[in-house]
Length: 94
Image (cartoon, rainbow, N blue to C red; front, side, top):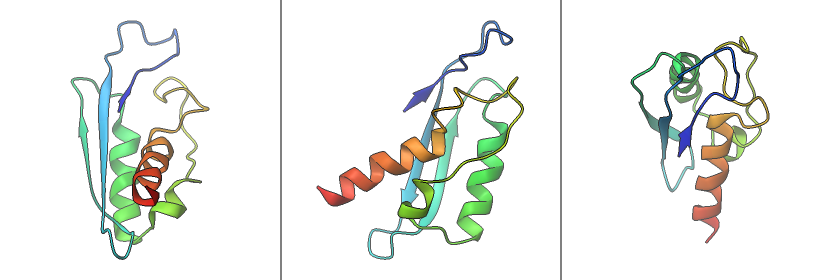
């Protein structure tokens, strides 16, 4: 998945990728990866770490939302972690 800031306040923001890894049996988050040449996904790195420590499930992440500075957040209606969890949930169901 690639995300790019929609805010005009960040001219030249680069796309970045997010990957979440779940335990298939327990459906809990066990890992995550962000590839970026920019600082934009800093809050997602912190959030993924906290979600792993909290042993959150894929279902719980589909309703995950964060407060963030609009200067550095992605499109507010598309929380990257939530979108990734929804995509994973669809794969697990199929």
